[in-house]
Image 1 (cartoon, rainbow, N blue to C red):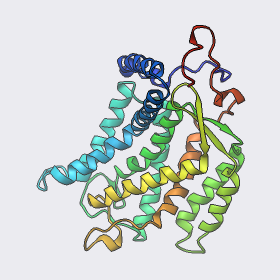
Image 2 (image 1 turned 180 degrees about the vertical axis):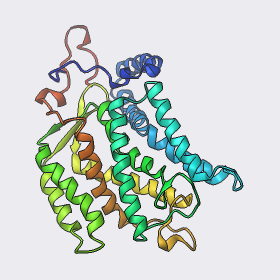
Image 3 (image 1 turned 90 degrees about the vertical axis):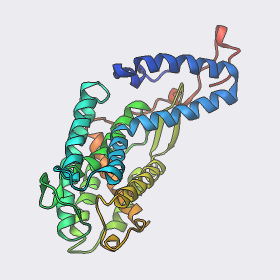
Image 4 (image 1 turned 180 degrees about the horizontal axis):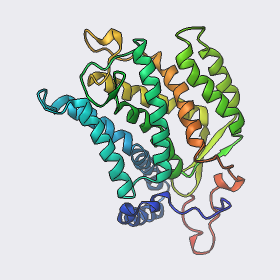
Length: 311
């Protein structure tokens, strides 16, 4: 397959994974030689592993939310929220030191930390949700670790972009997507004081991204899907993560003060729009590249490979 440039495995940028990459290559070759079904199963599992690896930062953060909810001592000298803040910083430093996260991804995390914290300060100020526990490391009632929860979304997008070697068909230009992201972000604040423009923002998102196709490389060839479907699926997982956050009482909506209940499905729309903001912020670092026609076509078997199953 030709993509117009040499594109080594994204995992090779992390030396920590060198042994795993070599073992995975041998396993993949055996699966491909065994036939179509083993190759399909292997590619499906490879997709899951890559997705899990892309979720590394967010997964560690949410594992901490669950663990501290279950086991953190109520009388500890360091509050639970402050512990989560320090732990999030330590995770960030460790991932960079081990080469398991790139500086480009760290830039996205830092940018989204600022964007998310600003939104948190406003939303808690107007009573949209609360943080019920005490802490020292906070700004205007917002614990500093909350910015890392927002940043985990940007981290996921940046990592999945690299791991799956994203290419695009009919991607809208930054000159259009950046104003859309800005309008969405402003609406999260302004709808408390004026008409909610959410419906118009959904329509604008559909117009801009409706024809866009993302090409992602799981194994040897690029698969493809409508990017709007990808946004919806990721929004669904963020909504599930939000239920984890409220179930562990990290933050609470007003209707959850007396007892936990699932977060309303209506929040999926908010997360979808926030996904657009996250995605556009990532494109400031990783510019969308077009998908060559050859990117989605299987390689033609030649020579000694002619008897191998199609990829």
